[in-house]
Picture 1 (tube, chains in turn cyan, brown):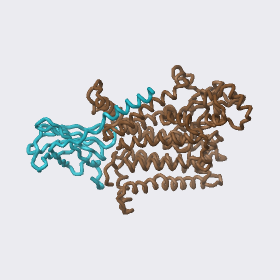
Picture 2 (cartoon, chains in turn brown, red):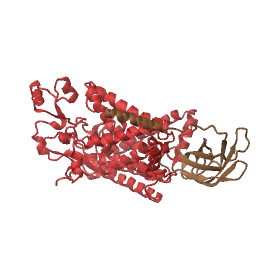
Picture 3 (cartoon, one colour):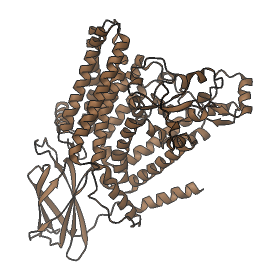
Picture 4 (cartoon, helix red, strand yellow):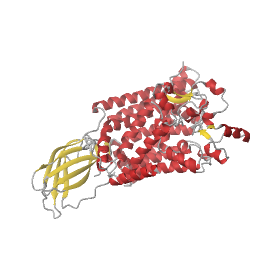
Length: 134
Length: 500
C-alpha cells in the first residue's frame, strides 16, 4: 500500500513539472547570425523584434540563452544590447561546440510581461564548411 | 599466492556480502529510473533541462565505463529492470525454456544493432520523451520475457545493455570466483547453481530423483516450495565459470554457497581474454562465432558511435543520401549502420584473419581463427567506449546540478537556490585529450598483450606465434590511430534537426 502511495506521489510530483505553455504576447522575433553559418567561437547575433503587424516592438530587456539539443554542455547566456527600432545585438555570442543549438530569447516587454521565443540553428566547426541543413 | 578478495576487505567486504546489497542498489537505481521516466514524460522537453536527457546519456554511461574499468559489472548488479522481474517470477508462469535455436548471442547482436541505429535515427539523446519510453519498454520487455521464460533469459539472450557489460567486463579487474577449487570438488549440494532449499524440500528433491535441480519457478510447479536462497540466475556453475562473460554480479552464488567459498577476487585484465577452457554457461568463447560477432560488433560500434559526433560523418551521410536518392534520415542511417556495424567489421576481420592464417602454421577454417582472436580486441574497443563516454561525463558531469535544482524548484522546493547553469565540466578542458589518449593507448597495450598470448597458446613456436599475431596487432594499432584522429576532430552533435 505504501509503495502505491509513493508511486502516486511521484506521479503527482512529476505531473507538476512540465513544459510552460506558449505565451500569446504580441511579439515576434527574428535572429540573424554573423558569420553565416554560425561557427564555434564568437558570433554576432542580431535580434529583431516586431509586433504581429510587422512594426518594431520595443522591449525592456532581451536575454539570450544558447543551449545544445543534447545534455552535457554548459548553456551560454548573454544580455542583448538595445540598438533601437526593435533591434537588439549580442556582439560576441560564444558557441562552444559545433552542432544543433537552440537559442532561447527571454524578452521582457515594457509592461513587465516576459515572452519566450526559440530559434534552432546549426553551428559548424570554424574549420569546416557547412554541408547543408538549417 | 592467494588472490585479493574484496569480500575480505574491511567495510567493503561486509557491504558486498550483505544479502540485501543488490536489492538496495537496485532500489536506488529504480528510484532514479522512475524519476527519469516521470521527467521524460511530463517534464520540459529540452534534453539539457530534463533528468531523462541528462542522467542516462551523460552520467549513467560515464559511471558504467568507470565501474567496468576500475571494478566490474556493477551496473548489471544494480540493474533496476530486474526488480519488477522478481514480481514476474513470483506471479508469472516462468516455466518455458528459452527456445533452443535462440540460445546464442545472435538475437542480442541484432538487438544491439537495432539499438545503435535507433539511438542515432531518433536522436534519443535529445528526446526526454523517447528516452522515457525506451526505459519503460525495457521494464516491460524484461518483465514479460522473464515472466514466461526460466532464469534470466532476458539478460543472457536479449538485453543490449547487458551484452555491453558482459563483453567489456571481460577486462575488468575483478570477477566473482571460487576461492578454493578443492572445496568445490568435494561439494555435493551445488547450491551455487541449484539454490538452497530448506531441509524438507531438499529431501523431496532426493525422493523425486530429479535429474536437474529445479529453479524457483520449476520447483513451485513440482510442488517444491521452500527455496531459501536462489542460485546463479544465469546458470553459471561456479567451479567452471571462469570470468565475467554472462555474469550479472548478482552475487547469489556467494550467498548460496554453504562453504563460504565464493569471493570477488582481483585478477589480471587479460586473464579472461586469453582463456580457452570450456566454461559453464558460455562454453569455449574462443570457439563461438556468436560471441565473436558480439565482440566485433561492440568493438567497431565504439568507433561508429563516436564518429557520429564528428563533421566528416555528416559529409558521409549527406553523400549516402545523395547516392541513395533519399532524404530519409532513418534510411540513410540504416545504410550507414549496416555498413559500419556489419559490412566493415566483416570485411576488416576477414582480411585480418586471412592474413593471420596465411602467416600462421595452422591450417584451419577462418571460422576458427576469428573467434580465437576476437577476445583480444575487447580492450581496444572498450578503450574507445571509455574515451567517448568519459568525454561527455567529464565535460558535463556537473550539469546535473542545475537540472536537479530546477527540478526541485519546479516542485516548489527552493532550498537548493537558483539553478547554477554555469556548472559543467569536472576537469579542465585541456586535460580531456591527454586522458582519452592514455585510455586508448592502455587499451591497445592490453590488446597487444592478449593477442600475443593467444597466438602463443595456439602456435607451436614463437616465430609462428609472432607472425600469426602480426595482422591483429596491425588492426588494433590502426583502430587506435583512428581513435586518436577521431578524438582530435572538432566535436559536433547534430541530427536533431530534420535535414541531413
